[in-house]
Length: 263
Length: 351
Ligand SMILES: Nc1ncnc2c1ncn2[C@@H]1O[C@H](COP(=O)(O)OP(=O)(O)O)[C@@H](O)[C@H]1O
Ligand SMILES: [Mg+2]
Image (tube, rainbow over all chains, first blue to last red; front, top):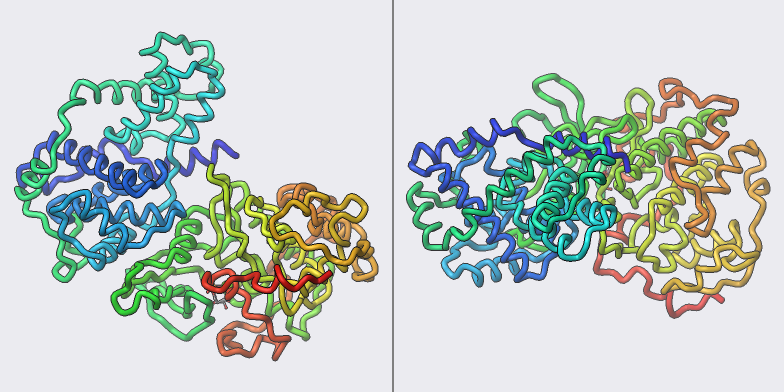
């Protein structure tokens, strides 16, 4: 496999810090703070993971869905496009894109099961699929760092405990922005470095043999480290509903012309 | 955006889409509009959303950008489905092969094969299998060059879970390991189909045009010999749907293609190797001396031109060169997942 290819692919789909900074402008006008938005992102990515687990989907499908979710809100606002529907639609689309087909009806049943207050139906889900496709600009291939991390772990030959931590860090990485900002092999490497640091494993010699931008790796490690202090403060469903009620979101397929939703 | 395109005449119809001629209102440029049929099984409610086949095609075309792969210019939703805006193509390789008025020189065949293998190598280097290679999915651009199209059955392989469906390819172009039920095949399934196309370009008729799976296989073995003979692909026996045919030895290709050059036949022989592990890869095939030797491949602009699609709409039934043999509706087998493809194959022993 040509590394340059992955690089070019990945950079095409990466976003800049500036892009992230100016997203959710309308939501912020309506009173959500950046912290609220961050918490909501974490909440919905966790919901994707939960729903995927309930449906026994592969990790990779969930990872793709989370990236779709984040990318969808680069040009959208929670107040215009209800994330409670979007996160389920992201999972539905990711199932198709990752060849793990799932009936929409089935998914709707599970979504209701997971969040009893969930009020949407199959039609809403399928309408949202179309909206998502367009907002993602039909860009559906996501290379996640999972395969990359497996390769790095066997190459570096670290012990089991350290590997375990690295996998944990990677799962957590979806609560941050690193998977939008950096290519998969850099994220994987960041997770490994973080794990090595906390297990007291010295990877310096091994790292020097790799031909990568260590500045980027360090940036990933910094972002991941910043996750941990706020770790416990996960948002509950009630707080989520309260915030979304604040911006008054509700998806109504008949009312929204496609141009109107956008910024 | 839908408003940007005008829709014109129907160009062709496939299993899951209708393709119309169109034009970009902003530039006046010709395009093809591939309108995916909304999922009929879901009824008016559209219970399933966008057809996974369409999604696959969009996903991969969005990724693959290559001189010999059809370009996805744009895409937009329309009535519960999606329209793919593709660059407009004049014709396809099936029309070229069937057009009795066209003479294909050795250099022309080399040119088509080179373009086709370049497209395949680009797919394979990105871990994409096409899985529906056949002459009418090789389109001919207005500038004469070949572009690989119809990625509805293609997919990214090498995923850890590995198992793939063997119900791919039109039977005439399906590699023997697929007939025998292999679920962990590789990119060389596309190379087999490319070999079939090369043979078809040389013969001007399909190489293995059997009436059913068994018939196709027996034609394959009549040319390539049965598995097991002379150490030819002994591992075939371990495949789930292996069938023992009456033993035959391979036929010298020279006998079937008396006019072809020996370097052409050497390459063809390497693409049509039964054992997938010994079959040449698309990248290796491009490095075969055949492509460096004389005559050089014809530049695309000088390739013979089949009749334009508009003048002979393929969707209407009549092929560009009048009626050829009826092809068994090929895409039907891999795509209508309901029909068990190998019914009969297990019971009727051809032995
Ligand atoms: N870009 C194009 N330009 C002109 N005609 C096309 C184009 N793409 C497809 N067609 C025509 O439409 C037919 C069906 O398209 P195809 O992509 O093969 O769909 P299917 O997957 O349904 O077979 C083709 O055989 C061809 O005749
Ligand atoms: Mg086709």
